[in-house]
Image (cartoon, rainbow, N blue to C red; front, side, top):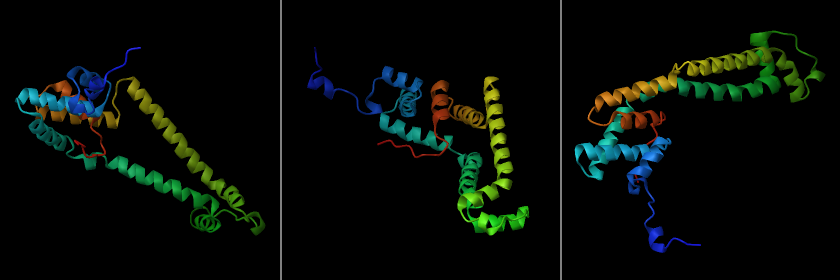
Amino acid sequence: TSRVTVDVAKQMPKNYDEMPNDVLLSMAIMGDQEAREERLIREIMSVDNIPWETAEEKFLEIVAENRKGLFMATLPYKLGIFTAVSVAFASIPLIFDLNTVLWFNELYVTTDVPEERDLETPLEVGSFAWNWMEPPLGQASFFLLCMQYARAQMQNLGIKPYTENFRSRRAARIVTAYPQYNKYVLESWSEGDPLSGTPINRD
């Protein structure tokens, strides 16, 4: 069986900026975001006739432009994360902690409290609290299920939900801002650029 030589192994690309164009293009088409970044840098090199290092500076300028307004655009996600995590942890004492359950019942439910011997364990407390916790939790679950179904049908009809719509509008804006570069190269990179604003690692 033939084996590769040490010289051949040493020639293997290790970073994206060492890869040939055809390999980079294939990886970009398959959704590799770092390959899309390198492809955009090479597009800048080709159009502006500048070396890689200078093209990288232009690329970082495009990154900054692409991420303008990101805080407000992602605010619904951040509020959703905060609300979901808060409600998740709050639901535990609201169901299983006796003092919390009695406090909540006194303020918002006002149902009859079982005898003390029926509230001796967290599971007994949970059985009592579940009388009023089940309807809102069940309704919240059903609401989310319906919203997920509606989102799926929007996608089936080709209607873009909020995230996809924002990514498309952002990509269109960046194409307008830099019309000298290939539209598809800019669009595919912009749409894959993370909404979290994760810093670009160019090391």
